Length: 277
Image (cartoon, rainbow, N blue to C red; front, side, top):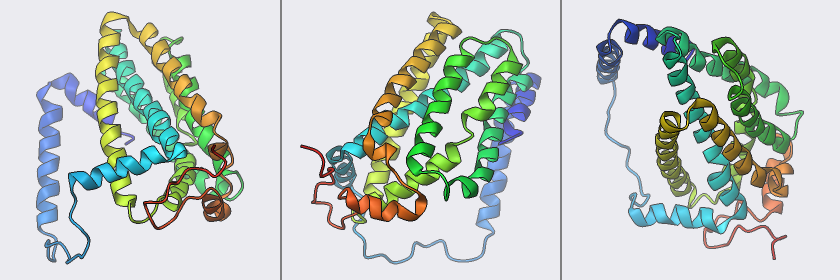
């Protein structure tokens, strides 16, 4: 994570073929290494029902039946899709403005440094800071970063902004991820996560394409302002959701999930908050 992007930029500066060739060689080495592992690759016997399209729609239906999950999936997740697209067009803009591919690759390195430093804080923050606070700050920092990056020029300031942007992402992910695991009925958990993954992939691809079009037609600063503003708007449902704000310390997550009516074994029971009309 720290050196991959700069090394990729260095290889790209030598020849456009080198990054792809290197990736192919490393993938081949990985495949051969996995092939040499001892043991059976046959899947273990399972009594679970096979994956199906109808099962996937069951996951979507459960997400749509829960107000909290609708907020997390349809408002929260696109925030980071927009952030990733912002990093991509920042790299493209830096190269266009004269930075080398290697220098531009340090944009990814700065984000990775932030995540690494944040991972060191997880064990300190989770027992002391409420999960709702960690989650909201984890979403808010990238929003501020993208809007601030739209007003800066040059590599150094963008690197400085990117390090703290993801500083609380590991802690926020831990708090929200643990709550989601407790909130989802076990009967639909796999299907719900699969549905979330498909949605994130589709939305991420669309956002990346639109960000590239925006960079080409509107310019870097305008595109970043639009993306940062969209991130801020998507952040508002999380901010105003009492269910998100009130996520407690990690020791009380299970009690909190049950108090909201989540975590039931049966997927047929609606997971709506009892406070809803």
